[in-house]
Length: 133
Image (tube, rainbow, N blue to C red; front, top):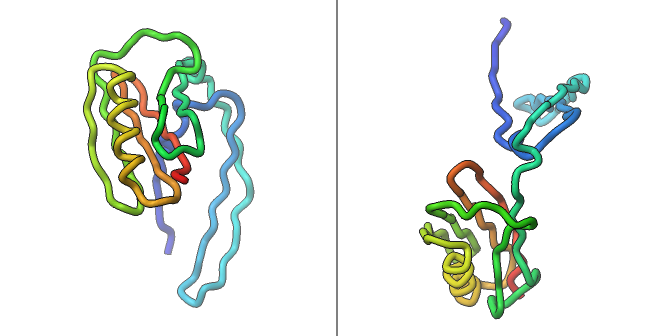
């Protein structure tokens, strides 16, 4: 019996050039097989869009900042989802400076380990990993 599946790669907004995919099919008994590798050319103008960086990393939250790698237009509203072993919290701010302070406070309260920060600006979604030490 043939089946049809669809997958949307939400990470393509940050890619340009060739991207490669393969499928891992896992049977109920745990046996698996990989498909052939398939390439796709991505000509994405937003791949050159501004990227966010978080520093220092690792951090305990002290002097923590989130900044654009290159100077960029400041988005009107910034929403971030902060995730750690301690839970998840949605943060909203008018600037990256304010967001940095809010995330720094969450980092200080988080248990040691990896913190994931998803930052949504007007036109992009950025994913940051920060090590809480």
